[in-house]
Length: 409
Image 1 (cartoon, rainbow, N blue to C red):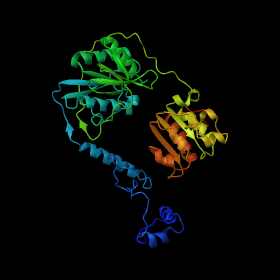
Image 2: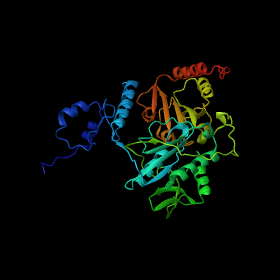
Image 3: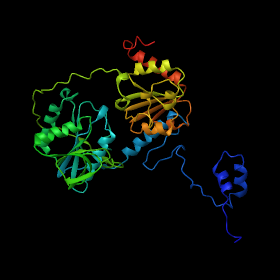
Image 4: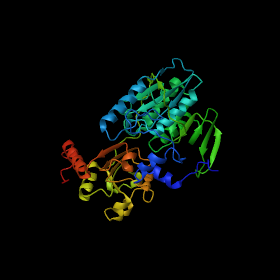
């Protein structure tokens, strides 16, 4: 019995707490004879040169933006060194029509391309991506695209479903894709997929969350049950229908149909209606600037929101202190948001707040604490006083568009 190595919970607690006043002493005296219940040694993601499990170099925030530049450069070099996969004579095609919100592939679009790659894998097929209007995406090859059709004429700008359907019918006539994939979203994919199915006279499978070459799984009417049915030619797919492509580089060869039927569309896009960002509900806003306990000049915060044409939000602390109304609170205890850009000013990042911004595309944090949770969550962080940064933003916007902000002072 005397040879059994017994555990001392008090010693283990001291060893796990590096800030404990007796930590160093206990480490030196008892580390060799105590059976620890601590986690195994983990890799430090802040070490320069660390590569994560997905091949993405982590940002060392203590070394500044130069490390971020080196990380992006390294990721680009890695992608260039990937072997190029080419399919010269495909037996069939799978056509994907991404939403391309903001001219770039969204996470939803990449899920569709990942599923398309599963469909053509092992069947000598190729994935066609059909893009309309202005495009700022430069990594179609890494997303799994074998052929790229880009309709960049002025007729394809804005809302023009009839013109786009005419182009899709030209693709159907020229290459006859075995399947058509559209994102089941409010950004245009659902409408285009429904219009194409009506034009081709086929039934479209909607709200598809899983699919293979024979069957699809769709969400039921109350989104609580799954319905399995035979696959259709046109699929309207939901997010996370498949894993996006990674570790591959495809050709993304440009091509165009021979002839596109021209016609006079019955619908005309007159542009977006100007709406006051303050009248937009947080759940529907695409650009949100949120203030927290770190804001010392709320008048400056409101002026910045006006200049940036952003919808205002706030943390729970700011709302409880009376700086913002309750309907502006962001988080699990307030409003869940899904903005394209979320600018957090002076917000430390409580767990409820981070849950509420989980669906935001890009998060920017302005904070004086480089170790706060919001900085760790953010895609881009600025470690400085909020007043200095907000003033600089106003000056930059006024110098860029001096006539638009003369009343902001």
